[in-house]
Image 1 (cartoon, rainbow, N blue to C red):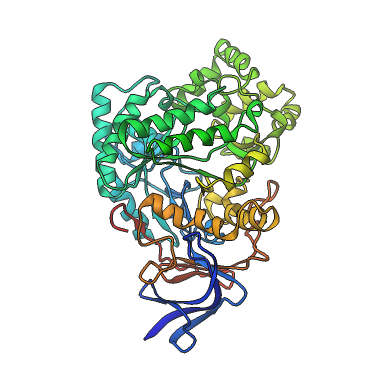
Image 2: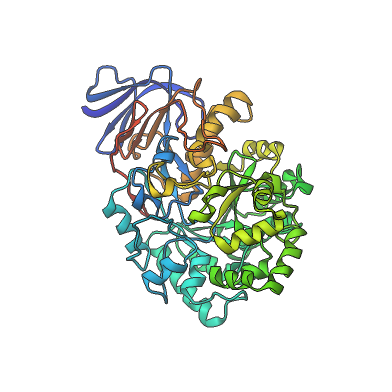
Length: 536
């Protein structure tokens, strides 16, 4: 048999967690055609993998590339890491459905916002329309969609900070069923800010039960984090699984309250106990000690209600602003200490605030002649879409979470090009470095994981969660999403000061059998597809 490509001479780590073995991997018609000794096989192209690892393409279980590849179709920052599939719609934010809104209205107010300079115009109302738009435009990576609770609330006009009423809940249930039936794999939530934070467990369970009617659908949650609530947040996520029977994915697990560093084991023990009771609960994590935080995220929760326009009105009122300042000074999310000298601005949306990018709030405040609290409120009046990262996590917690058997890897990043509209500013380094960082630092340097375990957490484990039989393992007949990397040199290069840097050691990346990265260079091929629940 003649093959299109043979990846020859590599050490195969197949995504199951099993030990590496020497084999060649043949590709034909976008699929893995054979695995074994193929030295004499006829082929059109040979990829020399001598001294390198060949493994399934990395599946980013927690990404935010819902619309970014409509502008940056190459998804360069992810492709160069070895990511072949982006799972989007996380944290309650998806680019569909429009529901009671027009597509233009959805784009204007949806939690998935489009950056300045983007040419994107929403012309879809549902999952099918969004998926078609991505595939028509041509994308380098595969995309898996989830439907976000925050978007559902907007689509049902349930925008006030209160539980949804019966009419609104009925609309949301209909829209969940429609999205999952069309191919969304999960319902997602972000329960930390308004209006979603006002949703009781019963509202979430009703929507999760609707998703659970469809085989393979699960529930992913950016849990209800606030002062002192880390363990209760895990319990609530588990409760949704127990009430409905749906599988639960706990998103980007972390301990962001410095007073609770070192207590990650308690969060995971609650999941282990739930699994013993029959609840399918897992989590994802990224390998950094800082998380992203938009500027409005540090305001009191009541001040965030009803969207950016309402926030701006409150900031313009002196008495209301004084009340905000008093509460911000006590901490965010109800009293979590905020380290002003460790909160770095990474993205500005107005010319007047672009100078803030790369600076911490103590530096910004000094330049403005204000206290950090005064500076953050006055800056929010100028640009309420300012974004930053906060160095507020413990390295010991990160290592614990990464090494535990219940973990899988998700970047919490967006597929962008440094040369496109989404590449502006100074994003979190996870956009460019998550997967090589795990392989180079936490496997090779720190020994937190074996190479086989790390690859499993990036590939086969995620495919199992998505219930996508065609992805995540090197087995004949499965889709040829593959990565070839050098285990001795793979490393992330993205830093806080210079995040737009590609990693080293990722030589080849194939998506559906086509080379997207060849010899370390993006080919600009566009073989990506939207992968639907129940089809893949």
